[in-house]
Image (cartoon, rainbow over all chains, first blue to last red; front, top):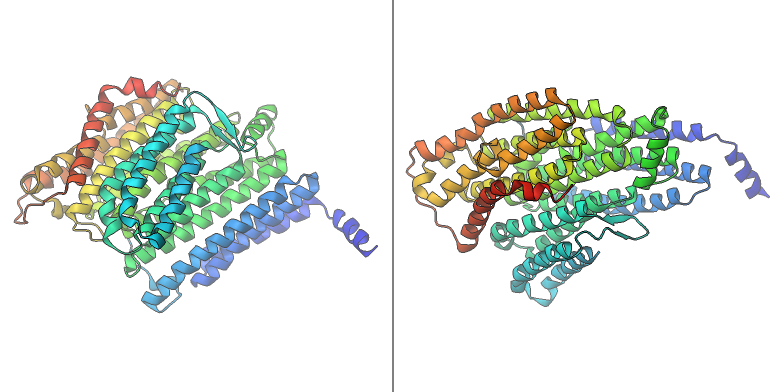
Length: 111
Length: 459
């Protein structure tokens, strides 16, 4: 019973609400990547961007009654996990050489 | 399918090589695998196979690029095996290279946005690691980080675009999206146009088109020279082809939305790339900016969208890849394997120190500048031809001006090679390097003799 009411009230949420929410989340992610200086925080912001996309895909999938969107979410989650593994490996490598996770500690390459 | 399985299997095998200690055999095995991949593409020619529920489509367009990228990788390995076998993690580097190529195959043959995403990620994840493969070198570290951050940032934009397109059309299928575009060409919803813009930003990052190119010079300079050579050739080819495939097949029926934006991007890319390259003293950085500029010429072919475009892109990427491969390998030898590359003065008196290398770098530079009778000239010719057929005269005029600017910095290197004196010792080359230089130089001349034959493969 509780589940049904949950499902009904969720169906009551219009698709535009999901769209706005993920657009806002995505923008927060983009701004975070552009303005934060700590590499770990930047990674988190990239994850936020990807998760905004996941939310949007899941919402569209449910809205259309089509499972393709949800399947794509699994692809994104799997790839994002691999990406974070590589990213953190790069971060560890940098930390070993500079003893810092601040992006400004690297600035050797400038035109 | 066969080449995908072959190279993935070989890549996994290469990783196991560390365990079972057959590292010595890896180089010949990988070369054989790449030759087999070329053979399979030739065998599949004209078949138009669709795989995995129509998610991959091996049409001639895909096959021709599969073959050319395998070939370029093979040539690259001839020179790069020094670099790969010089340090530790030999088998990992082979494996990562093969996985990159697998990603590139998927990127040129996708027929579903899921596959586009997977292909880009397979390629990028391996490239991030390769870019950082000199672990104790700060330049390499920084290159890997920048590449990683910019790459995943771009993927975010691309994915948001994909999600919006799914919302509008209800499909990830390139052909279904194309049909939707055709049916609603007059009044596309704002969400769809936003999606096109977002995907354009994502792909522009990948091909390093201005104003999204700023990562490229840094990453190209910081990464180990051999990895840069690979990035500037195979990776760039795959990105441009994926870009073109997306915009022809999916958004080809709504050109009004994106053509002006991409033409602007093409012009900016050519000018920013070429003008900035003029001011570079470091040859590696100069080549990096030149590779940005070349992406601009390729975007012209994309905008033109005439039936000549496919052939023009193929010919251009092939001739450009051969010339850059040659230039980067010679730079690698001249700069003494230093990560940051070398100043132009390192090329002083190369004509006396090693005539073959001097001739090689001259041919490479002339071809990149687009001087006839070399392949680079015909590459530009076919691109301009495609643009003129589409009636884009202004773009062609601007492109000609941009390539005139580029002649200046390519000639700086040639002048250093022939007219400057140096007391440096002569350079000895090993057999594989000589073979690589000879093949590249000969092909740059041969391609210029039979351009029509190559371009007509994609009609």
